[in-house]
Length: 295
Image (cartoon, rainbow, N blue to C red; front, top):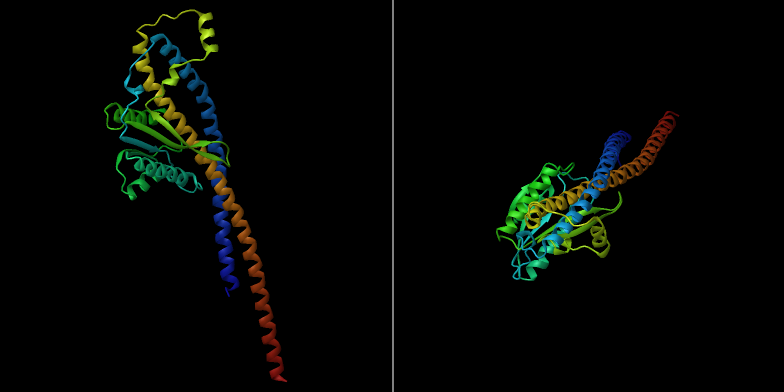
């Protein structure tokens, strides 16, 4: 049985750990609020970008652009899992990697080759440990991604697609639902779906009221410039969703850790009291035995 001093040292250690987990929970909560604000600010931009591309696509008619190319023979797929640079976030990283590896098994079963882009230190280290071929790695920004980070990822993915090295690009990331819930999402990033060039009847009627647009330069050229920006905005939105999910998962994990530490302290305190009582009882027995020996 552990001595009273040993249990006291362990209680102090658990209390210090609880202080750290509480501090990490507060930091994650503050970062989560900022991340949610960035997602809300991103949504109007993404909506306007989609409307703009749809308007230009309608004016240009039938277009054939590299980023829209639907290839008949798909043989190589690029998988891009978005993970974090740090751990202590519950199942945040594990569930993205688990889904990505399951997707790889599915694609290999269909006779396709799989290539990888590593985003985040956790994802990169896992892929390298499993000896997966990486066509690029992007780390050091997942806590607070900038638009330039999304540009770098989108540029690399677009370069591999337009050069014919891959025929599809799939993004795997956590979509933020709440601090308690993060949903793993698979998004086909490339080729860009031709659906974004279509508009519904309400939008067509709205455009008819506003009148015809005059495009300078030609709509096809404008669309060719807009599609890479649209691709970047999709990657940036996914990075923001992933960042918010990471902070939500970390806040929940640290809250649970603090709760578990409190329960452990209660159990250790009870164990310490029992050990102290046993020591006191033993001392009384020794005193009584010594007194009887003197009689």
